[in-house]
Image 1 (cartoon, helix red, strand yellow):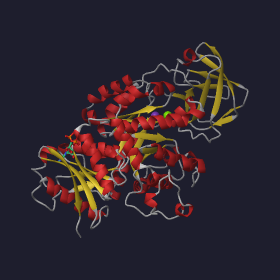
Image 2 (cartoon, helix red, strand yellow; image 1 turned 30 degrees about the vertical axis):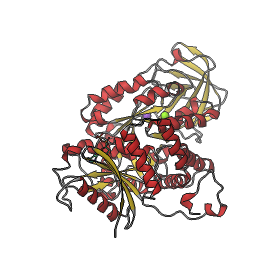
Image 3 (tube, protein in one colour; image 1 turned 135 degrees about the vertical axis):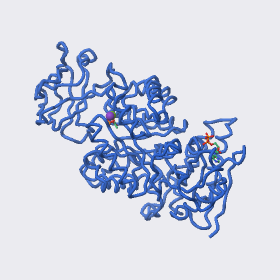
Image 4 (cartoon, rainbow, N blue to C red; image 1 turned 180 degrees about the vertical axis):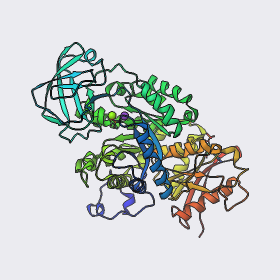
Length: 543
Ligand SMILES: Nc1ncnc2c1ncn2[C@@H]1O[C@H](COP(=O)(O)OP(=O)(O)O)[C@@H](O)[C@H]1O
Ligand SMILES: C=C(OP(=O)(O)O)C(=O)O
Ligand SMILES: [K+]
Ligand SMILES: [Mg+2]
């Protein structure tokens, strides 16, 4: 039996597990989002990250200033140019995040059973019995017996810097807590999480708005990662804000579900958002541990049937300091893929970890193995059944393209798309082969000469107002499982002169061949509009 036919539900011959995997063109169909920081901001390391498979870069404004992030982004652009790999940019907001401020950065020892005061007076010096925090409403939000967690920025859960507190009383604006475990806080910034407590701060803070309208607009961010999304209204509000920020009306909003309030409003949030981040770091401490897996499976199912990308966070924490993940982590990554995630988000591992590049390639390899045993047939049937009948024309075309591609064992599906909708719909059916989305402006196909650049062997396209929309669409597919953009660039001379759909397709195929993603005699399924009709066609390539 060929390894590509293994299905988890069927008996697997043990020896076949050890068969080496065939090298494929893409590291994995599942995408990898990397949080950039001190260990991942040189052109060299960023080039390594891109080559290893990172396709989205997260800039987390919980930490550091816009100038620092700008420097990192400039280096990322240089790395994109060097490696010819596209990368999308995600701005992650601070939102209603509670932080412990340790200005002097002196280590703070906390002893189990001792008492510590949390005070909103940020001017105070942090010490073993006093921790200044950035919010003055905590004493009104918590009560005796509540649980508070403090962890290093991007805590991994395995550090000795994480501490649990239990609220013993409230004194004015201060919250008095009993320390549950001995710990030493080292560093300048700590996240504070009050379990299952509503924090009366806006989801999009004034600081977030300022950063979005300056840094975000300047850099044409592809994704806004909306931290601590608690209601659908949060997404609507962010959308309205973005609509007034120049090009950012095209920015996609990914709602981060990080607490029980977000979990309770999941369905409405999913309807409003473009995608979801299952923020298991915070959610994992808000939920009882035995419930985390169930949220993951339920949320991924809902995202999958809605055809909206889902991103899972906090997978290989231990790789922050180690070259290999734990067995539990390795299994967890595979399960995230089997549960239906589109992308994996790395935090501390890429930001401050010792092995950012190795982490990306290890996670990519695990994803690729899981994809091989993903039961596409069953998934396809479930998805079709969920959609029901009558289907919209486009849904029917998309599912038929995937079915045809599997039946004829096509090596790729090529989808022409303007808004990106058609390509996303195809990806929704989780084909086993990559979907190359050819992003071109519909109206201009007859006026221009074409050449292509893409996620593979691309030419860097500098922002250019004439095809800005297509750039957004192309980069936004970099977070969807199985979707790989080819961005048509009308400024480069193409081999063909009469730029009809047919010649665009020929150029796309030539580009695919040149880069090795399609080979002579391969079958390719193409989805495009010819005149008014959407068509799915099967092409058999020659030499
Ligand atoms: N520029 C194009 N040339 C040819 N066919 C296209 C083009 N853009 C989209 N299509 C096809 O049109 C249909 C609708 O695709 P979609 O991505 O929803 O485009 P839009 O929303 O911009 O109309 C699909 O069959 C798709 O393959
Ligand atoms: C990704 C997460 O949040 P943060 O932005 O704090 O890293 C998380 O909580 O899993
Ligand atoms: K954040
Ligand atoms: Mg978080």
